[in-house]
Length: 210
Image (cartoon, rainbow, N blue to C red):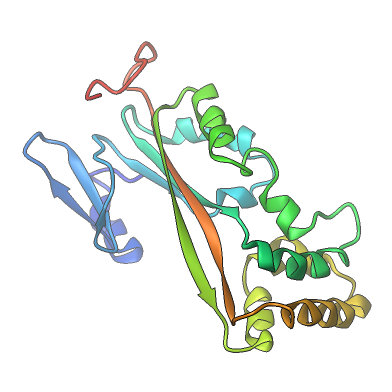
């Protein structure tokens, strides 16, 4: 989505976005009460880009959606809690080729680290790349709640739906067996976020404000 000052009136109710004009004439977008980086012409927020089959190819096409000086932003899952790796692996082993396991798909290049994502963006002409990481604690009331959540979220949509119906009970049993070895009802996921700027001109090498 390409948001500009002219588009915001009709997009605000759907995306819970508001706009503030600062003293320097720039626009600052606010989503959920959190103010993003200032942009002059627009902001492209990309939900779950790591689910794209060819992310590097997509990045090259994002620029066509951006006005000069706009900002693109997205987040991705950077790391799994080590205690939960055997749990996820217990299910992923039941996925037949050529489908990929959920964890392997999420950590494939460039999403296995911060620097590869920066390189992907800069190699396609984006400037002023900034990143941040945060840890999110997930807590479940029971193994059954975790299993139900996975079937309505990314693990199922990306990978686990490829498990043959006859193997699904075994995958569930194996995962629950691994869960019994974990102390506590939850774990920690590490997420990363990145923003990058479309140059105002083809000759611009960096943000004039930096």
